[in-house]
Image 1 (cartoon, helix red, strand yellow):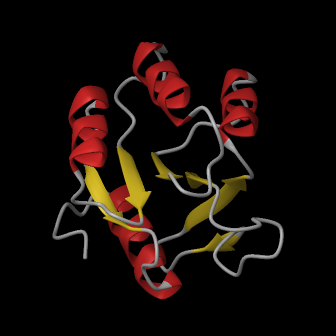
Image 2 (cartoon, rainbow, N blue to C red):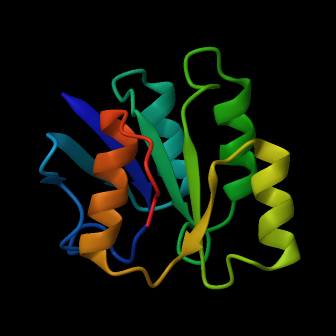
Image 3 (cartoon, helix red, strand yellow):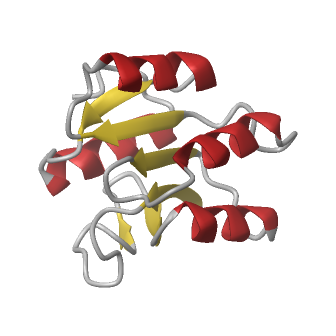
Length: 130
């Protein structure tokens, strides 16, 4: 099954967007923070088609996680999308460019729209993200 990893959209255990299957058959799983995401990815059981990092809620270590993704042979080409309260800020843009993320989206994006973005990105349909 296709999987997308979401690092951390609120308290993932209670978020409606986690552990759901999108219309295209993509399972969205959550990691509560960057450390947990890295642990899950290192265990090689999780092979996401895309990773979404919610900067304000991902905890410390977003740069380390992005660096790990780009350095890991199995994950270096995995598409990454950054969620931020200020996606156009220079720091966020620099982070996107430095780690080759696809881009940044607002972290307050409606959950149905986030599910739509995940579905499109993981299904290979490369139309507009939003």
